[in-house]
Image (cartoon, rainbow, N blue to C red; front, side, top):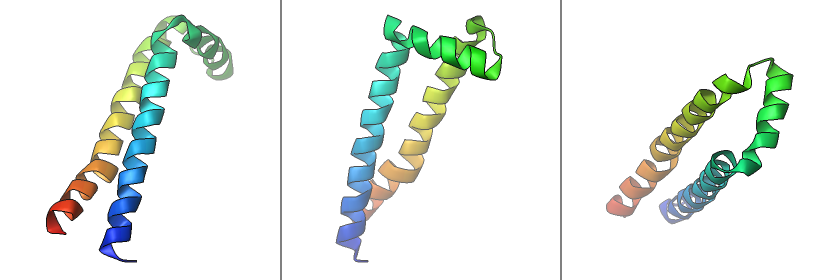
Length: 81
């Protein structure tokens, strides 16, 4: 694998992961996320009042993982290349 193909791979990974993050944020921030709360509440036996904090933690951790594993390596390889 060449550095150019790795840079392209990481770039696409970053774009797709951020698109998924934005979609998840919009779904959970609007009323359309209420059906997810019902499913998750029943599936994991968690009160719906606690799910907002758990969703926020999920979004924060996912954003951090994208930053660490996709965006930073992409930027470093762009600088090196």
